[in-house]
Amino acid sequence: MASLGAILKHPDEFYPLLKLKMAIKEAEKQIPQQLHWGFCYSMLHKVSRSFALVIQQLGTELRNAVCVFYLVLRALDTVEDDTSIATDVKVPILKAFHKHIYDRDWHFSCGTKHYKVLMDEFHQVSTAFLELDRGYQEAIEDITKRMGAGMAKFICKEVETVDDYDEYCHYVAGLVGLGLSKLFHNSGLEDMATDELSNSMGLFLQKTNIIRDYLEDINEIPKSRMFWPREIWSKYVDKLEDLKYEENSEKAIQCLNDMVTNALLHVEDSLIYMSALRDHAIFRFCAIPQIMAIGTLALCYNNIQVFRGVVKMRRGLTAIVIDQTDSMADVYGAFFDFACMLKSKVDNRDPNASKTLSRIEAVQKICRDSGTLNKRKLYIVKSNSSFTPVFVSMPELFVKSFWLVNFEFADFDHLCRFL
Image (cartoon, rainbow, N blue to C red; front, side):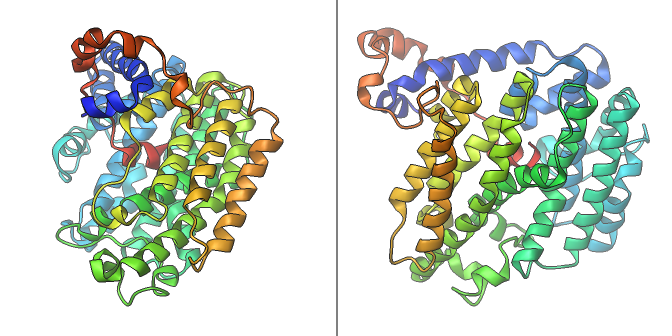
């Protein structure tokens, strides 16, 4: 929950938090009445509130397609993530999942909490899927088939090389980018983006997610999930789990910085992809998670807390990004600000410092060359003088209203992985 101390420290975040809280409540009121669509949108709000909010801005036809696409892939991911399912059971399900979406009666019990409900009631998602236009169905089926096969491949294969890492991320996230591009094009609102650019959108989000979730994945019970490539981590430790031990802190930081530097390779493609979008709602849908990803990388870089607990963007800052991302000027501005934050954290003694600085400076140059940095509404770095006076002059109203922003945001994992 958002703490009073955090809001007092960053008073300019109060109003965006309040607006976001109210927008989420309003979106929850708009859940359709039909049983299967009601289930889909209700489940969407339960597994990812902020995603449900962003998707709500899309037109009805595209919104329904993206909602179903998200839930189908969320269900597929639930099967992959459940380490209690035997491999000989899991692999056939992953490979055949694209067929199950046409079966109104199919379900499979796995996962926990809301995800178990999603799997137990998957026939509701299938019913909604079957009401989509054929073009949307074909795109969802194609991506589900390819993703399921890729996931199955890596159930039986470890991520050894950087090429393996890119391939795995392609299957679980790059394909999401390809699928969304197909849905956008099918809606008639966007030109068809290249596979390369669409793939990079997904890889940038997924690699951020994998970096941030190191500790959660390595501590997974009954079996660790290991997605960091051996080609990178073996330069620093003998076993991937060794990175979490305090005596290896220096090596852990070096390995982490190496991983972040690798992720920065996808920034240019992501910026090119977003700059070509024409529909404002689709633009925001794509841009918000990308900004959150570069922000998360900036927080994770050189941060030992990645190996000790959870590192994520402040809820108030997330609210500002959601509220104020309105144009490519805002995107370039946010990427520039976070690139500056990253650059300030680079230690020249780090073995990858020169490579990291080169990639950061490339991002800064792209943002500067856009000629839009002085046209943006969104500023990640701002002086205290920019704080809105109402938050200082009306402390009683501020405290009384605090309960309104005492809420939980969506798990960044969900937003990252499927946008």
